[in-house]
Image (tube, rainbow, N blue to C red):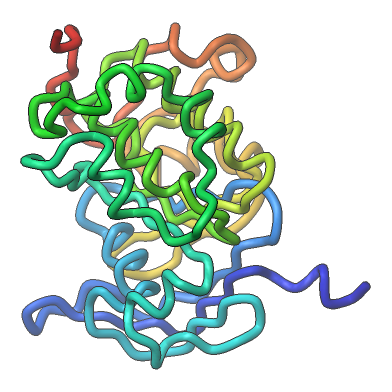
Amino acid sequence: MAATTEPILRVEGLYARISGQQVVEDVSFEVPRTGVTALLGRNGVGKSSTIKAILGIIDRTGTVEFDGAPIQGLRTEKIVQRGIAYVPEDREVFATLTVAENLLLAQRQATPNRELVDELFPELRARAQQAAGTLSGGQQQMVSLARALLNDNRLLLVDEPTKGLSPRLVGEVAQVLKTAAETTPMLLVEQNLTVVRELAQDVVVLSGGRVVHRGPAREFLDDERLVHRHLGVAGAEPDAAAGAPHTQAPQPMTEPAATETEERP
């Protein structure tokens, strides 16, 4: 019984560098076995670098435990094989390959979750033979999410899934993440605080590559002074999260990226 209360992911004293520059500095936090933990902070504070360090994509030191076992000495592909899925920032689809080929490359198990993927992303089935690089930004994000959900995973690491999307597409992505989180714990980097309020149970806030706050998501988001101090914006409106998130405008922590208003044919 006690073992089930242990976190699925534990990060302790994590340091990471990119091209000799320190980007993560003594970061420690845990991700529970259920629900969504949001990793927050202004741009450039080390959120994406923290996820990449956990996966071993960038050089790091410190302790990273997955389901009680240390993984900091493993190569990225070995970490992924243990059941950690990664949805990268900016989608990173294989542009010259078709949607079907992108999904096939991501498949790790003999019987992938095709029914789930088809149910969550019906448009991708219709565009299976279309080159992924010709899709709209929102459609490419769906491909990126579908690649992760195609396999049975024990943890999802999702980096900026609503970045640059229109409010309608933000809502669609948020709904997919909500469905995925019902069965798989998630560490989510997200700028849209309405989405964070809708999905997250816990938050970890970074500043300057360090953890400056950890705690319940609602408690943090309801404290406007705390949100403004660490993120530079007002918290998401409670009423916005209670309704459909796709009807609410994003609440970026810095200047918003250009949003996508039209789907490509």
